[in-house]
Amino acid sequence: MPTPTDDDRTLLTVIARMTALPGKEQQLRSELEQLVEPTLAEDGCVNYDLHVAVDDPATFFFYENWTSPGHLEAHLGNSHLVEFAGKLDEYLVGGADGLVITQLQRIK
Image (cartoon, rainbow, N blue to C red; front, side):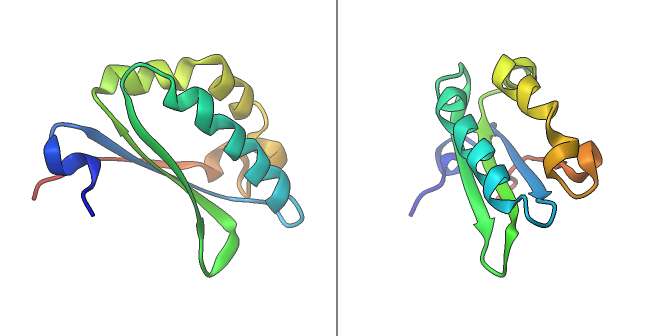
């Protein structure tokens, strides 16, 4: 099955990882699910896929691809993301520091 970067190696791939505080797993999942639709409508968003770890239902990942770093920057400033960021201390192990964002560029 092809991935977005099969056709365009210049895409900026992002992996965002976060773990819910004990007892907050379902609330975090709900909050994350609500981010998907408005993000997919953003200019420059190729995909925005929400995953949960098979061996840890408290750990969530977004697998994202963006057409440029500028589009990712715009995404991070959109109201739905800013509102969610204000809740990180309430939902994540480590609060805001518990959100680990890694930017990747495909090489092969």
